[in-house]
Image (cartoon, rainbow, N blue to C red; front, side, top):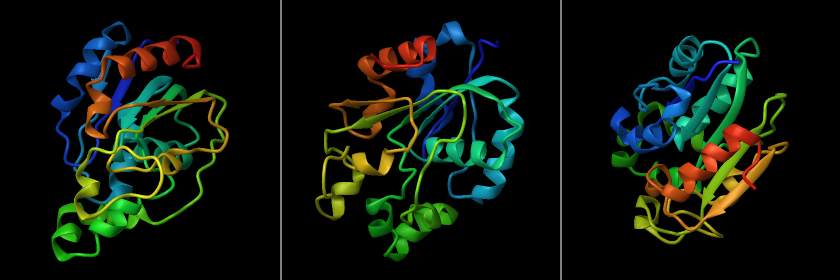
Length: 198
């Protein structure tokens, strides 16, 4: 079993945004997958499938988590030993849909605009999937009004839910802080080691 872990940042996030989490997981030989979130999602899926290799542990924040989820659904031949999604709106994103109504929002999000429609999310892999969702409503998604239900300021907790996930942890963090939080990095390390957050 490889010790490799692949980190995938969110929309508009550079590779350096994953540095804190990478240091916390240095025992797992972290590598960061870089991509342009505004570009074609299908092309990013294919690039991640090639980058991931075989048997990596995959950790994605926000759009990066959606990219991991969609890549693994599309490529059953890519083996993942464990997967952790951090604030990833795999069921669509209310804030993204709202932001995309305006010309500026559509331009800023580019091709990923279409990903924010509501959809189902079901885990059909043998590897454990862990989901971390923030509950502190501090983020850009609130610039256009409050979000319904518990949320991290960008993504609602219910939008991160995956049927069949092994475990979920709710943390009192805003969306962007999920990748620089000591408590979140500790949860991720624990999940990689045990397949559970508890």
